[in-house]
Amino acid sequence: MKKIFKVLGYTLGGLLVLLLLFAAYIQFTGLPTYEVKAPNLKIAPDSALIAEGRRIVMTDCIMCHRGSDDKLSGHLWVDDGIFGKLSSANLTQHPIAGIGQYTDGELAFMLRTGIKRNGHFAGPFMSFPLMADDDVAAIIAFLRSDAPEVQPSERRQPPAELKFLGKLFYKVMVKPTPYPQQAITAPPPSDKIAWGRYLATGKWECYRCHSAGFETNNDLEPEKSAGYFGGGNPMEDGEHNKAVSANITPDPETGIGKWTEAQFAEAVRFGKRPDGTSLSPLMPPMSALTDAEVSALWAYLQTVPPVKNAVARVQ
Image 1 (spheres, rainbow, N blue to C red):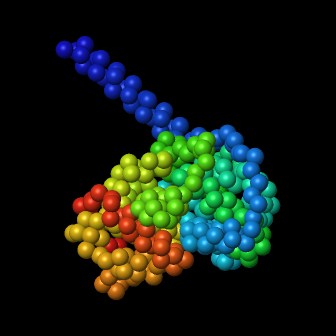
Image 2 (image 1 turned 90 degrees about the horizontal axis):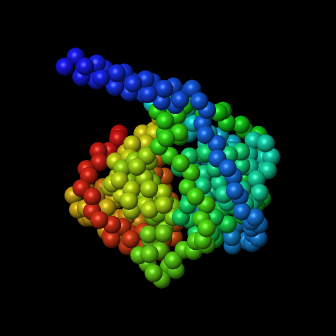
Image 3 (image 1 turned 90 degrees about the vertical axis):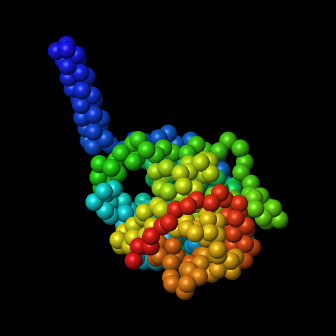
């Protein structure tokens, strides 16, 4: 019996040492870097491409990257006692503080994988692995344009100050997505449900916030994300606005199963719930979406398996 306890003690002691070594690795080593394999890509912009890029950026990217100068100069994005401090990047054309030195291929590689030109990982929040090539090209065209929002800004964001869980997230829980080896094209709008799925998972990536949590999302196969569109993902911005993402599956009791398409459109485009209350600041109105896009999103969400998940509003 004494021998058994002795072996058990050695085993537990060994496990404790391994856990301490693992914790020390997470806490005291730097964040990983990755190889940059940017494609040889040159975008040929035209007015239509730039206009679509502006629509995408000013609907989606602006939420995280708008600075106090009203340019895409970044700001403090996350500031909490669990994850730490993390700022969004300067996406203006400044050659040092921004993306002025990026090639088109490096921008495409960053947008697809989340890997910056210096090999650092921006995180899963900054990767669009399922976005159509045309939409990626549109974003790049706009970032290269003479739009005031992307003109050089010298604003430099401070380096990340991550807590232990933040470091664990970047070192263990998330990894860059691979750069696509095949062309990605969006379904035609005439295929309403397929196009709606693309908008929800590839272009606007609605599932990221509206599933159970960022750490359990599946970026390459979104339908395999935990609580797919069932909401419950707790979020907070740099100004400490808090929200829990809504259940937007067709569940009639806890989701949007009793909503009409018109009510859904009002929520998406104007930030109003059917009861007249406003959505959280973390879900700003997406007024630039077209009627066809909103209708396609609605049609697709009707096909998503209902998730029974009552999400309490954060006041």
